Length: 175
Image (cartoon, rainbow, N blue to C red; front, side, top):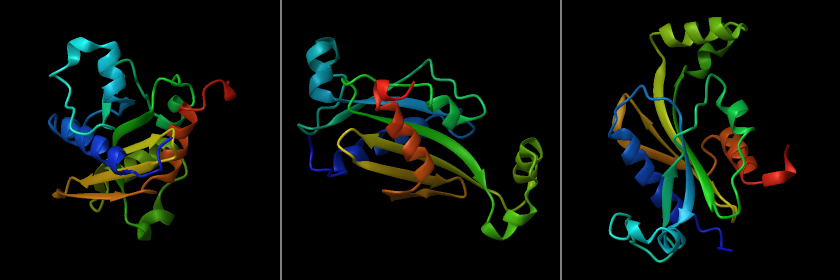
């Protein structure tokens, strides 16, 4: 196991964020399996030269094309389990948020709450890319649509999402 140094995870998340950003905003959630590049090239030698091999412990993100989150991403993640051959998992998704001062004005009804937030003049749109590794490393990156030149990051950026991603790596312990 690694020493929980998140640098290789952060590098992979930055690659995912660049990849997703190439398609602009208003995208559905996208899920990625994270695998050691060296292991990937052993089983898929035809990818040599097409997959960056910058560092010995580099990770490659493999998009899960069949991922359809629907409305509740956390609920959808509860149904997914990755095999031991996958070193980690990451998700890229967009959300709209309001400043905390408006929290008490958000309706309790889920549909009404979505409409309220989406039509509010002070909403902030953000894309987050959150990832976890089996060694315990975790990190998240965020880009605001209103400030696209800045990429923010933190280990505990979206704790609930991080927990849901960790559960996808727990395998048969959850059924």
